[in-house]
Image (cartoon, rainbow, N blue to C red; front, side):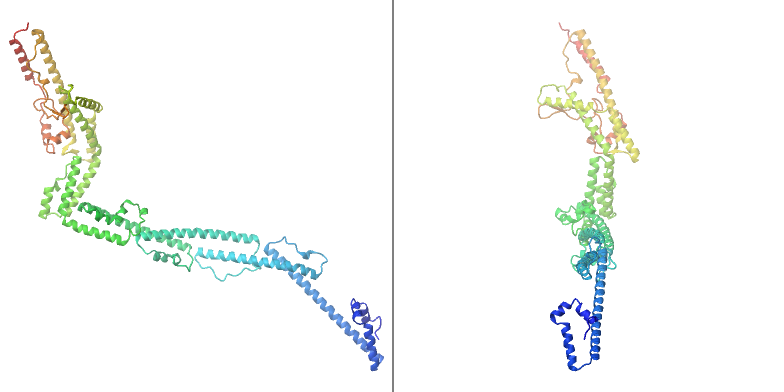
Length: 608
């Protein structure tokens, strides 16, 4: 029978399960039932005690096993809580989230409570970590991709995912990655824009030169073709260098072709001018000729520098050159006429070696190649044009001087007109012109001729050649003009002195015999022959000829020389070597006049 103080009885009666055992079955009832069974069997008391001891031992084994299982469960719970708490701490450190409050910090909490409180926090941190790792992986993928595009190497497709052990997943680190990515994205955007600018420039140059754009950019990198959609545009430094080299090469080719086309077009214009080509033929090459007036950067028309365009212009030059050879004689005569016109307008003597008659004879005889003769005339035209530029200042001075001389000559003729103050038709017009001429002459510097001579001498010293005006040295013409002007002034002075003598004789006659009308007018009051009607009733002075034996001499100018002579001042040379007699009234004429006046008065009766 089970003793009341035995461990089994104590465990049964004092156990927390006693209440539940009583409700289901009673340990005592079971024990009594067991003892009754043993009694019915006829077990001895020793066997009963032995079997009870065995039963008690079995119960202790069950308790011991249960305790061990509970201890093991506690250890596992403790280990799980510790592991999760360690993982939470690690995740918080990796994520940089140190402000999260851990519920495991509560004191006197059971293991299951700790486990229940730390598990949600761990799951939340794990989710944050996965999201953060995904963000880092995405940013790293973009960084490596852009870096590969910039460096020119393909980025690896199998990018290693970020792990917790070797990566900092904090927001600070994430911000650094994002900043670096933004910098790379901006660099990529700038490079794409620059590549686009380079590609557009290559497209423009290829269009102007008539080259294959696709093939040109493919030689730099296949990704630069717009048709290539499988590969992104390469933005590496190698691509930039390739594009820059291609652009420089195309610009050099454009410069060479522009110069070549300009030379061809210049030859075309020269041939067109020589051949008098119609405008319709010139319009065919309007695109090519437009290159002459454009700078290198302004030549943007597609195909204008293509090899086809240059070949077409070259063929036209060859055609016109062959045609020019057949019309060479006509061209030589035409260019000679142009040379003579230039020389005539600027009063330069043309080279006699290429005169029209001589050139005709040389070409007909076959002694001279017409091309060489034409080239010689072209060189003479160029030389004449250069000389025109160097003579311009002196020629302008000559024109001003000649204009003033014409006004002075006209005013001189006008002043000798005895009827200039008559109230005839149109007289007021001549009066106005005379007043204007006086103002113009008064503005002429006294040293104009001397200044012109000095300037001409300086020009001759600089050019080491004589300044010729229609074949005569200008300094000689100016010196003759000064001499003529001096003689004219002296002649005027003698005329005034002689007039005073005549007035004195008349005064003496009137004092001796009284006043009497003169039988004839004095020579000085004769109506000049150098006037003509101008159509409005007034008389306009006409140019006067130089007087060798009498009359006031006309001032000699280059224009008056050119008008009188046949072009090259033969008369000028004669006049410059033989002094002129510019005395209008000689001494003999004065004596005869005095005698006639006195004689008539002596033979006439006195008046009452």
